[in-house]
Image (cartoon, rainbow, N blue to C red; front, top):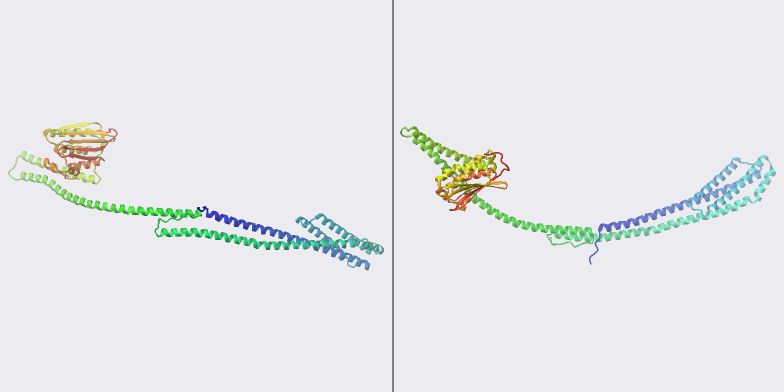
Length: 533
C-alpha cells in the first residue's frame, strides 16, 4: 500500500504550531503563577502591616495608660509634649490600620470585611475612651482638683475599659498572627507547586522537541539520500534511472523534476545522435555538391575560355572585313565615287554589327551588376508586337514562312522600357524565322492571366535537343543544328533573358528536335492603361 503523501512544510508548520502552543501554555502558566505569587506577597505585606499596626496601637495605648498612672501618682503631668505625641501617634496608627484593612478588602483577602471594621471601630472606641479619660485627668491635675482626678482614675480602672481593651487587642493580635501564618503557608505552597511543575513542563517540551527533531531528521535524511542517489545516477550517465515517489510532496515534486530532466536529457541525447547522423548525411551531400560545384566551375572556366575565344572570333570577323575593305579602297587605281561609297557602306555595316555586339555585351554586364538602366514607363504590349511582326513579314515572305498573330488583349500594359522589350520580341521572332523550314509558319500569341501578361512565339523548324534547351541562354552558345542552319553570334537569347529579368519577368525556351521550338515570356501586368508606347 502506497504511503499517504504529505507536505513536509505542513508537517513542519504543525510541529512548530504544537511547540508554540506548549510554549504559550507554559508562558501562561508562569504568568499566572507570578500573578498569584505577587498577590500572595501583597497579602503577606498587608497582613504584616495590619499586624504591626495593631501591635503599635497596643504599645501606644499601654503607654498612654502608664502615662496616666504616672501623672496621677505624681499629682502632675511631667512631660506634656510626650502626652500629646502619644495621642497623635495612636490616631495615626489607627488610620493606617483602617487603610490597610481597606486594601485587604480590595484584594479580596477579608472573609468578612464588615466584621473586621466593626472590631476596629470597637477597639478605636475603647482607645478614644482611654484618651478622653486621660484628658479629663490632665485638666483636673492642672486645676489641682485631686478629688476629680481620683474619681476619673478610679472610673477608668474599675469600669473595665482598660481590661476590655487588653482582651480585644489580645484576640485581634492572635487572629492576625494566625492569618499571617496562613498567608505565608499558602505562598510557600505556591512556590513549591511552581518549582515542582516547572521541571515537568520543561521535560515535556524538551522531549517533544527531541521527538520532532528525530522524526524530521529521519524523513529528511531518507528523502535526501534517495535524491542524492538519483543525482549520482544521472551524473554517471544513467538517464534511464528514475527517482521513486517520496512521501513528502515537496521532495516528490523535486524527484519528478529530476526525472523530467533525465527524460529531456535522454531526448536531447537522442536528438544529438540523430543530428549527428543528419549532419554526416548533410556533410556527405555537401561534399558531393562541392564536387559537383568543382566540376561546374571547371565547366564554367572552360566556357569562359571559350567565351573569350568566341568574343575574339566575333570581333575579329567584322574588324577583318573593315580592314580588308579599307586596304582594298587604298590600293590600286583611283576608284570612282560609287565604288568608294560601296566600300564605306560595307565598313559602316560591319561597324554597326560590332557596335550592336558591344552594346549587347555591355547590357548583359550591367544587368548582372543590377544596373540595367531602363527607361520605364507604361507600355502597350500589343503596340510593340504589331510593328515587330510587320518588320519581319518581308523577310518571312522571302523564306516562304508565314507569321500568324493571335492577341487576346490588345490593351494589355506593362511597366517597362519599350525599346528593350521590342528588342526581346525581335530576337525571338528573328530566331523563329532563322530556324524555320521553308513553307513553315511562326505563331505569335499574347494573353493576360491574373496579374501577368504572357507572350508566346513558336516555330515549326529544326527544333532543340534537351541539352540545347538547357544551355540556350548561355552567352555565345549555339547548338550543332543551329550552327549549320543559320549564322548568329549566340548573344540573342542571353540578351533577351537579361532584359526580361530586368523587367521582373521570366523567359523560357522549349522544343523538340525536328518539331520546332517555342519561347514564352511572362511580364507583370499593369492594372490600367496609362500610356501607349
